[in-house]
Image: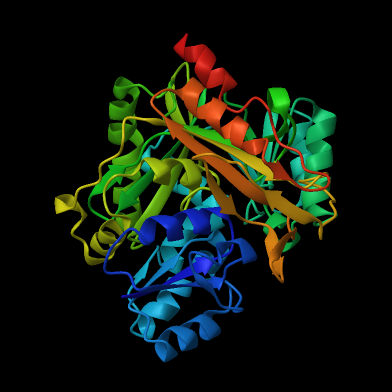
Length: 421
């Protein structure tokens, strides 16, 4: 069986590793993939957002099943294009991927269907946004409406910070058209939880919960990034809270999307805040999170390809989705300066990582060597019976990773471990 995975990051590498476990899989193509994936997939130099190119390649190579992983191609309609070409695919269609592609759509959906979230206002003129900010209390959260590689959210402690964020998004256009509209929200407080869920539009089956670490620096300081590390499961996400989320957030969201004529089939990501008033939605993603996928998929015991096929065919209700009771810790090695300006082209050395998993992201191959080619270069993930053991193994493995300018957070899992004491 030939598979095609669209994307080039650590998430895609983790997906490919898991898909390879199915004995029916004979070949996996990664479009475009990266140099570090070479042992696990055949990389093809076709952009993840080249809909026609991907469809033509899949037909030419007689691909049996495609997995579209990143938000960009999903929101552009990659799944629609592949399915129209007769290629069975995992992921939501364009009209459902809008749940991530537009934060305003997501907020309006939650308001209409009574799904708990932060209060908000939206603006498509920066003068009106600035005027609104002069009359509210702080902190506030300013979000670019469209996709921004996980960097389009600013938590602003003061009015000056919020005004700067609005100007950067709407006037300076640091996120391009994604900042044409901004959403300004109240700032929720409490532990943050990521829950990825498989859904075929009717049935929803959650994966192991996770705790992402979005800020660039230790102590949750610095700018928001695409994610600097993650642990799973999240100790703040108790069975009682999980039950409440299923009743008030997860199933209502799936039903709301179906009622809107936007049936969601794929991986639906819920970014949650556990507030004093109960769990509330911070954000939706229309795909596996990165780096959540690197940790959560290491704990999946059921066959990933079987689950993905069931999601597409609408048979998830009778398909097992089981996870290990172990813990996972994933730490990102990033280029110096990320998420702002950084240099690339430095040799990457990886050795003596024990039993940890290395999922490559921002790398390119030159001969037999790998070189940095992005902000988040690779992730190191370890699993163990306890979180302290998993974190210890991940950081021990990180000692064997080297490239010029490398930096990583040294406190991934610290808050989770404190909660368990």
